[in-house]
Image 1: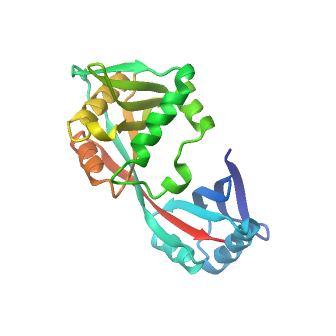
Image 2: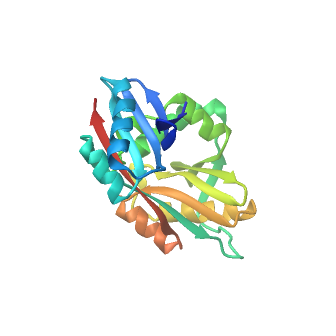
Image 3: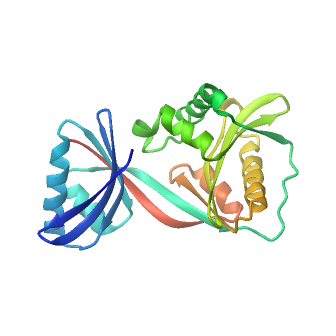
Amino acid sequence: MFNVTILKAGADDIAKIIYEKRKGFLYISSLVIFKKDSEVLRRVLKEFLQKFSGYKVWIRAREEVFIKSLLRGLGFELKGYTYIMRTELPSQLRYEGRLKFKRVSLKEIDLFIRLHDTIFIENPYPSPLNPILRPIRLEEAIILVRDNYSYYVYLGEELVGLLALSLQGSKGVISVVGVLPEYRGKGIGKEIMLFALSKLKDFGVKVVELGVDAQNIPAVKLYEKLGFKVVARYAVYSKSM
């Protein structure tokens, strides 16, 4: 469960933090700075973090020189980068590929979790956030299945991947797209993406977003070929308190 905290210096709002506590971890998924006063920020952020002695702290923040300098001054280590990519859907789009897609039900949540972790843990381009996001927790998997359009992906009779889509008004989000290790390099990822875009088009979506780790160069290149462009860049930092 995520919490929101406003860091203050006297009566002034200095920054907003969205964070979640897990066993042994503190994950700050958003750090929004209102006043770029490095000394004040360093002090109020340090005071906040001191509440979590013994925790491993992870921070995902906009890729900015100011934030990088601030966090490194507090002893944080840069672990990697993530992107938000976006595309506008064309007026005509229809999937006519070889894959089949079957909606995931909550009764199959154990299978969904096993496949999800196999795909994202056994990945040659692991996310810098893998230590806290993997393996996926039961409650997170339930949300993906219950509140998203989640699919098993089949090539013939073989289960080869997963897909999860969500709707935010006229914007669609590709929450999960992944191929099992033994089926990678066969063009399946591209076909899953084409189905995802076609499905979101059917839902009336005009703009689609997704997140990707910057070091996953094959995925970034695939998304670029499909018309996606990077619209936001984030850096991931960590430190043991």
